[in-house]
Length: 443
Image 1: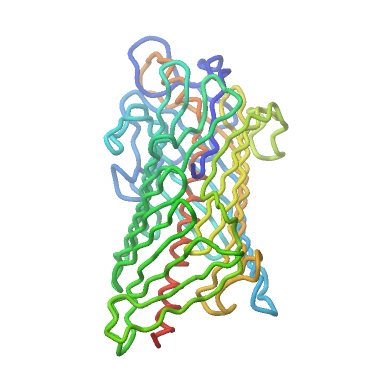
Image 2: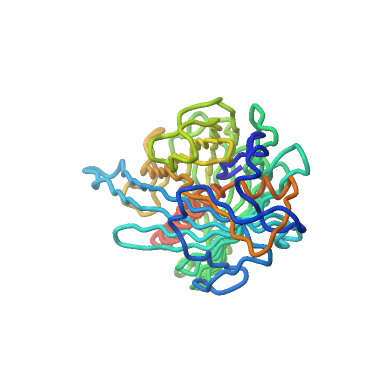
């Protein structure tokens, strides 16, 4: 579950002579490249070895590198209030430089291939750089290719660590089959420069527990498998002696969700809970998470996505993901197409729609009417491989595992950035909820 669209075809083994990876013993090798030359000539920074911006040095034996480029768009549409605000559009260019380091880590106790990546996202009013170590496990011969997680630091000093747990993280197969299914099991943690930390443990079915710690106190939230949930927010209400506010989201009844706000630790007489009837915007038997990848066969690669050397068609792997959060009013639907050629995955197109149903800012009352969201955020990105090359200081041979790693450009990174974006939306809802509850200080 969660933002992967990366796969490796069995045809990759036929291209071993085109590129070589790090590691291995003597014999064979020599420098080689796939034309055109890489547009990004500078070495990739390493967040795990040196501070951001410091040069990364390939280990003895060299390492495979890739250069990717593309564009992305973030579009925000408000449905309420009326008249609605104008649509906000942010267009960015994306550049990535990747070095592939086999047998790296450990990452949470596991040794894996590290796709050490530097990304620059350039928008009209902001440039963000992100350094990411993304860890991939390859089978010895055949089987699933698994992303066990990543660690990233961006130029805003936001640090994110994501672990994909059992049943989650499959990003490809050797040989490529009909498709695969992931569950949602993962652990996400983030620390911000102001000292705020967030930790979220997601269960296989999408239910979760979350803790946010900041100067104002600690917020906790629990989403249950049936869509019910609770959250406790550290909001103090004057004169009542409360230590916080509790949000209760019951299972919907007859098309209504009785979103309830009550005081925690209040002095007697206990203030009556505030019940906000919300028209149901999700199913009475909600599915909290889904992640399915399907092999659609050979399809044309979108024009301009990749350099001509990488072909005009490939196997299209379509990944469809959903995520529902009934506590904070979020519904996410993502479709990712990844085109795989004999070189590996070379082009990726992402389309993610995130609907927000609870308006904690107060601009629209509180909630949407029926199944119409208060706000819709759409993220799209098209990114492809522009160059691949080997840098080697000594001759060496390749194991089959190293060959697969060297031929797999790291398109997972775009997904990691999308995950950071979606987590930022969740953080925004947490902040707006805190402010909303503070305004309702009459409890």
